[in-house]
Length: 114
Length: 135
Picture: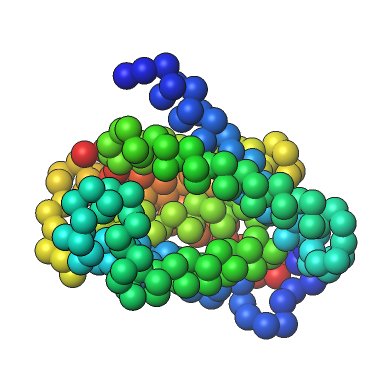
């Protein structure tokens, strides 16, 4: 296991989470402002760029590592996205939703480990 | 929140379900397209390039685009902390359909994971139902 793994896996995760947050922000404002708004387009462009970075880094990781090693980390994105949506997008996150997201994350990790 | 600007086209929850089915189908098609072309070149098949020779792969790619567009539509109306966990139901649907359709084996640990995801989905679906009443 080389140092690249410890750097690239968190970067891929962060890129995925920020990508989803940007897309959510952009689509949410698009419902009010339409798609010609500069802010909406900037959010969507940032979202698509982050998702592209995640996509390429994931491909790079998959070139060197097993899917059963890489995929469980993607499972963690569920709980991280829920927490980030609560903190950054101010979404209401109750106890029930948090436990739900935790269980789904843990379940995906178990399913993809093999 | 954007509850007041409710869509006039389609119910966002139905679109979320449609997105999940698109992802499930394209993952299975991708597998099909990749395996049926793997014999074309032993070396190039590792890059995924050979998979482009199969029409199934192109169908998978169009479904990918459709699923991305439906996901953007879902994000417009449903909070990310509800929509994203629910969309990951696909992570248990893929192994379950491989088990049912392709006859692949599911290990004990994997069954435990599937059970955990189902409980998590039920917990997440309750607040989602409350949100629907508000919409």
